[in-house]
Length: 575
Image (tube, rainbow, N blue to C red; front, side, top):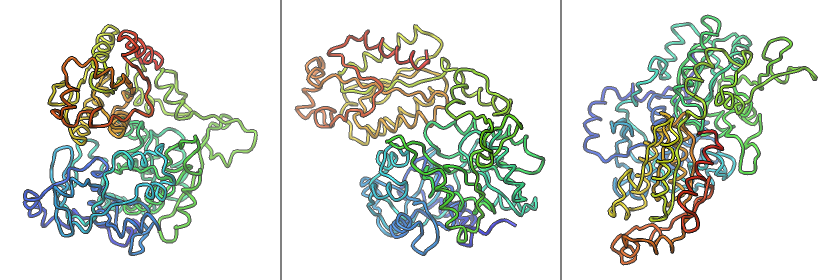
């Protein structure tokens, strides 16, 4: 029998509101709207289908503060992760956001209305406190802290939602189950004990052995439940991963395992995330949940140390086991023992016994360079799926992102680079120049901060698609804000697959030189007030904190700068 949902009732809002969905759709046409971000879209889907039960909407201030401080909703229900809808002051004014107001939440992919939110409150929040309490440190090396700093807007709006429809999916539809559907599937197969396995990475022999061992120990079946929403920037794209999961399912004993996809936006919050994952799997009907070493950890902090201890997640889930009512299956890292040709948990290996392992870094190196991957580590058809998506470095796409003041020389460098890379051959070369991909007219130089950021979001999307297809992309917007540059970098890393190679080049030509050589007189017009919002005059240019290369046309020639960029690509084995 499937596990009882968290809070006692599965909050399937789509089923609840089905009889009024057409009425809601008609009302949506009369209301103001918010276009959701990718993260908000993932959150909304799991609110609507009951994956986040007992939530029925985005957290209000009372629930938010309680979750941040105590890991509980204001009514005392265990829930460790704040689920919030961030809005800007402009959004608040535009939509008249105040208690009882109703707003439409729209899909960013096609503008379709998904739900109507009734506002309970709008509140400011403490980003630093949220970072420290939820993620353990206010450290931008943590991807969710970087998100808070660079992408989250300044207010949260709380309120319950009414469902119009869930976000549609056109990929791997057969593997996408709502909690109600998966529960029905377990019931049909008479699966009474189900061990859920969470992953955001490709699976290899060690993962298969771990899950089979867990199933046999618990006399249960296995739910392979990978995340296909947002994961850590730089992770293998979900298309490749699902092809890998499909290949590895055939390696399980017949009838033991089932594959279902989870549209979750991970926060990489370690212990809190493990607790959250357990609640989600409980809502999907699982009775057991595997928590491994450094579960949902984001890696190293700014000091080069792990954000969380290796077993912090297991300890927190164990602490709440009676309340959770889903049994944790703790596992240490599985390691290959050549002498017996098997995988064994590291804590069961006697001292002195030879072991073998391939790290994620080493695996990526072998995929990149074409070096063989041994059978003891992975399966031949799994490796073949990975190699399809990860060609050798000299066939991978990349993005050269040039940023600097107007007339800094970035456009000239970009055009010269295009010629040099076309001479190299082997890839198509795309040039995205100016503030809106090809239009560097005067009218585009005086933009508001938000208009400029929105244009960069569009550039990031186009660049990521081109790089994914193996192209060399040269983008040369002014991009004066660190948050916008961080957004572009993260978008390339998360959406470009093997083409997620990003290089930030700061064209640091001094303002005096840019202005002194301005033949079009735009700086003079900006100083006179004729072009408002001009970067370097009345909008500050924030120097990049971590550029891959810094150049300056006041002291370097264009050919010398182009040569230095080509050397950067050669050093990275991309050409």
